[in-house]
Image 1 (cartoon, protein in one colour):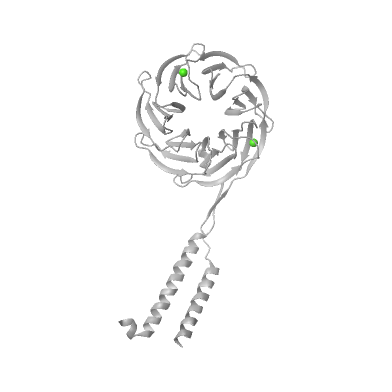
Image 2 (cartoon, protein in one colour; image 1 turned 180 degrees about the vertical axis):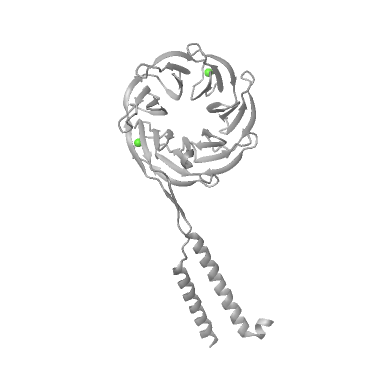
Amino acid sequence: MVILLFPKKRKFLSSLTMFLILLILLSQQASVTRVKSIALDITKIGTFDTGISAFDVVVEGDIAFVTDDYTGFFILNISDPTNPTQLNHTEVYQSYALWIEGEYAFIGTFASGLLIFDISDPTNPVKVGEYDDGGSATDIKVVGDIAYVADYTDGLEVINVSNPTTPFEIGNYTEGEFINNDHIQDDIAFVTVYYSNQDSQLVVLDISNHSQISAVLHSKMVNGSATLHVKNNLVFLSSWNDGLTILDFTNITKPVELSTYKNGGVTPGAFYNEKDNLVFLARYSLGFDVLDISDPTNPILVGNYYDGTGSTTTILVIDDFIYVTDKSDGLEILQYEDADTTEEALSFPWVYLIVTIAIFYLYRKIVKKEKN
Ligand SMILES: [Ca+2]
Ligand SMILES: [Ca+2]
């Protein structure tokens, strides 16, 4: 009973403990002041009304190609992004997905499959071919002479388009209720598959042999109904249910979930702008959000844009320009200022030190009073 025998030492020990506790609290406050602050300045600079429901956009140089799922296919001159002007409008019913390859535009429609337009004269696109054997083309990727079409209930269809006037199917893969998203990377296809029990999965396919496509991975790291965006080894799954999941696919058969960012709502699309390590998230009736993924395991919300109307479905970023299909608002062109990353210097919190000394002083006084 050393403490009882030496009351002076007990007093010293309890005072020391008190001071140490205060010091720990102080040091924690000191670390809190180390903040990373990033602010994005986003400005809308141009718009083009496509009529009813702008859905997808592709930009090639000074030309923007836009689908409106009611009014059709638009070709716009955006050399002056503050004033997009129409080069052509062609009526195409239920046109969703869009891909531009060389002098051809590939349009995925919900009712009439794949349509191919010759766009060598952007003021006068000419429909040269189509392929439809049922299904609903909701996503298209073209690599060389091959078009990969996510054809909803018909699965993934592989279509030879070497002669755009006579496209023909050379392979397919069907699983689950429907496939409505695909991305091609070398001999690998990523697709999102939906099942009748509301389950959904990211499926990785070996497409090296088009007539014998096989699944090499089924991943459940999907948050509900998701849209796929792939860049390098990163797979971004934006969810119609809630937020974004980022997966590292460096090892194709052993993906690693880096992070899940929940925002509590509809997120129909994502686009990763490597230049600034930013992910732009289409938020439908909430405009779009911007996440800093300098650390992909910890995405940080750094910006948001919503002008009060429209529903953002597709977002595309080139340099500092943001191209958004905003349903009833048509195509919107915005610009953001380079992400300004600053780290506040670690300043010593003098206020906390003064408070600590004051508390310590008061404590000593109370102890002294009680003793007396
Ligand atoms: Ca089909
Ligand atoms: Ca809008």
